[in-house]
Structure formats: structure tokens, C-alpha cells
Image 1 (cartoon, rainbow, N blue to C red):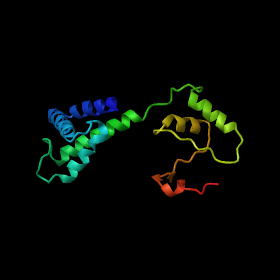
Image 2: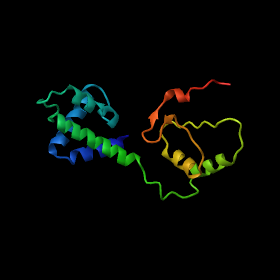
Image 3: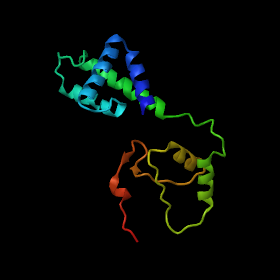
Length: 154
């Protein structure tokens, strides 16, 4: 998380001095509220955008500038959490696991739990053409449907 936050801060500061000062102000506000000033605490940006009036400023930024900073944070996160997996070896551990899973015979579905979103598992399962279901429905604009994960235990 510190690396992601640092990257967001750097990219935000790249928008100009005004944005670097705003970031420092938001960090100070987090500390004052006894919150860690990591990127997850920066939902404060959304609150600021919702609270600010048309001609007001918060942390030195007007509404459109706060939105620009928020967009910068989102773009940085998207860039950093979407790795290029094309160079992965065909024998990376996740792929070996997927290959084994594809060859096993079973009567019930296999449930795989990871403590965080794991793009390597998804990439490996797709590479081995193992059908997966992660609770999202649709293909054009997929959406999470929690009821699809509920099932009667046997």
C-alpha cells in the first residue's frame, strides 16, 4: 500500500504545485483525524467533491480540480494494478495449479479463496481454459451479483 500511495502522490503532484500542496493538506487532514494517509483513506477526495460548493475551494482546489486529482489517483491505481502478464512463463506456479485442476475429476465445484484479488489465478485458469465464476454476471458490462454466490450447503 505505501508504494501505491507514493505513486498516486507523485502522479498527483505531477499535475502541478497546487495539486502537490492539496495532497499535503489532505494528508494533514488524515493525520488530524487519526487516519493513515494511504490511498484507501483518500476516499476523502470523494467526500470533498460532494461537499464543495460551485465557487468554493477545499485544500486549495476547486471542484473541477478535485475531480482532476481524483481521476489521477484512479488512473494511477488502474495502471499499477493491471500488470502485463504476457511475459509469464508457461510454468509459473499458478498455471501449474490450473493445469492440475483442469485434469482432475470431481463431482463438486472447486472453490478457490484468496485473501485479495488475484489476477494471477484468473490468468492461469483462463490460460488453461478452466471455466471460472467469480460472482460477476454479464459480459458487456459485468456486475457483481451476490445472490449468485449463495447456495444451499449439502
